[in-house]
Amino acid sequence: MEKQSENQEILLDIPVEHERNIFGGLDCYVKKIERTLGVHVILRDGSVKILGSEGNIRAAEHVFQELITLSERGNTITEQNVDYLLSLTTEHSDVSLADIDRELIGYTIQGKPIKPKTLGQQKYVRQIQEKMMVFGIGPAGTGKTYLAMAMAIQAFKSDEVGKIILTRPAIEAGENLGFLPGDLQSKIDPYLRPLYDALYQIMGADSFQKNSEKGLIEVAPLAYMRGRTLDNAFIILDEAQNTTPAQMKMFLTRIGFGSKVVITGDLSQKDLPFQAESGLEQAVSVLKNVEEIGFSQLTNKDVVRHPLVQKIVHAYEKFEAREKYRESRKNNGRKAGRK
Image 1 (tube, one colour):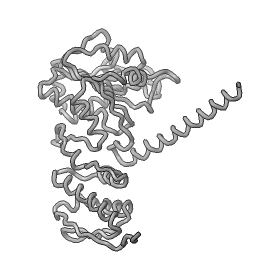
Image 2 (cartoon, one colour):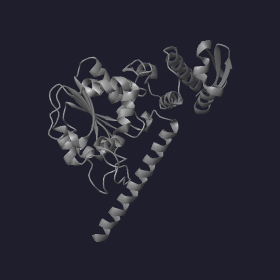
Image 3 (cartoon, helix red, strand yellow):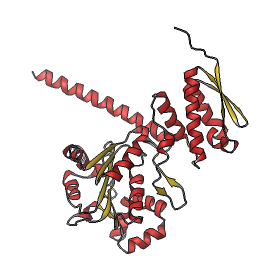
Image 4 (cartoon, one colour):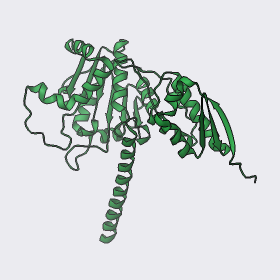
């Protein structure tokens, strides 16, 4: 078998106006590509020379071509874009980030485009488009709530639904907050703040306030859903891992005609009492074979916050897997001892 040459090179043209965006501050993206793919990149005005083995330089060329396409479409290249492209390349995946980037959902109030940024997010968005009800399950930072919110606002603006309802269980995140001052709304608002933040960013505070006063956009705790039938609405249940089975069943049976529902949650961040069953976990098990319901399982690869968040999520996943393995070994040992 002929040994592959380590001294091959390829010259790639890069538009000068996109160099800074593609190379990153102090050429940090280029350095990351070099380290990950084992190539040497020489930067010149309007072009890059890539040196290395044929397979590696072709991989690096593909990464640069994808980054050029993203930049030419007006995207600001982020470290997450580069990391995701490199992970796809090292896994020999035929997924194109440039193809994913074509799927525009809408714009923020500042005019920033809202798009899926990973294959998992793209599948999630498509399921929301196609299914009446979708469960979006995954770790923090995967865009579960934000993308659902963007889809809800677009459906509302295009008159596909007449109302947006956003809800989450009012449960403390591992803290006993005690007595909160103020009226009922003041007590509830801290639990719902993340939903308000996303609404303001996508819709703008003024537009939200006007539609809220008309009753067309509602942000409320899950307990407020009891006894209602929700027709012609886009309904998002956030932090669903903190619902009890009874609360989840109550919510699911509120759905009326012409409505679309997205239920989001992270099963690794339950704030329920110790050993209490999550309504989200039970619902996924009970409803998995219902054709009209979609299930999107996002992973640490779909994290689009700071790259450190992705590493933290991955580290916790490994830790929790080890703990489950140890616990199962311990339980098996106990059973063997009883025999």
